[in-house]
Length: 416
Image 1 (spheres, helix red, strand yellow):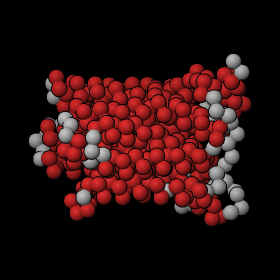
Image 2 (tube, rainbow, N blue to C red; image 1 turned 135 degrees about the vertical axis):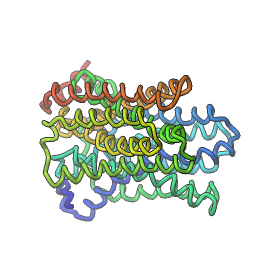
Image 3 (cartoon, one colour; image 1 turned 45 degrees about the vertical axis):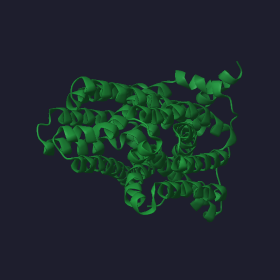
Image 4 (tube, rainbow, N blue to C red; image 1 turned 120 degrees about the horizontal axis):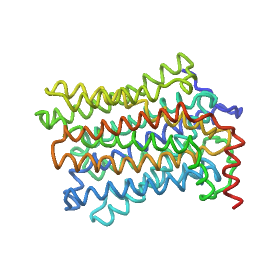
């Protein structure tokens, strides 16, 4: 597969530039997965209960939600290199701190700072990749290809920690992961990035919220990220409720992640071999949403462990292409690349998505505590239906913006 880049005249620099967005989304997967992967050991080290540990996860998500709103427009102003350096350095150092943390306060601060690092690598990965891959002409294809590596980061982190923590010790194992993240800075330093053309003004980007692309792209991600986080957090509990053992339930969760990765790989391959730029004119996202309604409902009505596992795997397969495709379509609808607002656009839609990732799992957890985990999945079906509505509006009701109009939106805010 050939990945055309911007033409700098230096092929070596092009290679490093290509590596950076993949390293960014991979690192994001690692950072988001690490708290789940180290939970049992870190709870014992810190001597905390599940409620306190849950606050560590909430701190990471809340810090990420705030940070991405600042980092997006900041990247539009200062460029990719400073954001990349801060992201990989902060992420790696925070993992080193988390590896050696002996008190809850230290772990809490590390999680907050990890959110900043995560959103730096997230923003650079999801904005640089669509700008340089495939000549910047197919952001949905680029997003699907990139986010395969997010899934790999999330999938491989618990496997690595589970395999080496007993042999090398918890601290050394997590420290090795932190050191790997820091090493990615080398690629940032050697890359040849496109030049930033904006200026930093956080309030200026608020005007983007009034545009249909950002509003409905964000609301679509509110539903999607809420679903993905909920499935990642409750699938093992759901499968245990289907009378599977802990080991079998964890294998089912691994199956969900593998299916998620496979879904993105399949979507990327199909978009590539067909040159399917019609993705922006076809109801691909709403159709995936309809499929999500069906397969999640399969989980609700499953009466046997086998049916439950099939529902989980199919849910991962269907959900896989949704996030990268929504981001790609939103970028096109908002003319984000052409208007130099990609960082700001991504910041807003991802922040709205993270809000969904905070609220939807809380709802499902509450319903599960009051009834059963399988019945609580009915809430996920409702969220999937709402996703179909928002994504249909994004596809059908939002026209492709004029780049000059998007520039004017930001300029009007700057001149206020």
